[in-house]
Length: 288
Image (tube, rainbow, N blue to C red; front, top):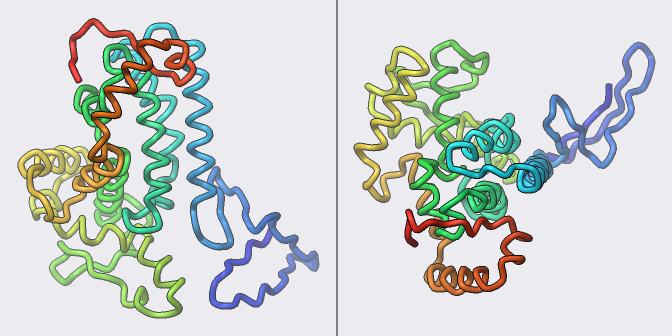
């Protein structure tokens, strides 16, 4: 056993003993527990960077050893070997899309961007077009969707964290924990990033027929139907709108022009494409 002191509210950092033996302090003010790196600052940048590193190492291994890179094969590899690394225990550390978190959000997104460049026919296409072809969403949207699914499980007794949520009298809406607005600014910022608080706005935007689904699978189906019917709505605060924010930061005003010039350079210098794991194989099925 070790002691990890949380570095908020002027923690006095007392020593603790078990059976008369003083417990040692965690090295570098962090400790890995059940595969998650816990930090005394209660921030998750070390955990996120570790997950990204593992995923990128696996991408390098796949790029060196996998020859068949058609869409079906590569998507199966991605979902089984890459994405689990950057989604392990994600409800604990999911960064909120706001100022101060975008570097981590875009770093996580870069894993999916990097892998999709390896796939035949689409390696040189814009990221948003690759997502459409592969029927994928941004990782940021997928994490928000995961928060909603975990919340549905908790509120229906399928998770042990149900008591952590504050539910309205109707039982259909979530309300903010008053403790979030108390304490130091640091405590307030940490609290509002917890699952039970960051999911409130997304959950309350869902129609009752989605919230009252009979099972987790029904909830997933109803959630997808709700998205498809309302995906063109802008500024409504629904969970999928984070994809537009992510893509706008990746594909800025000059993105497409730069992409054309970059692709031309890669065609003229295929060794650079191989070094960057960009698949130039194309039969003209897709245009971009």
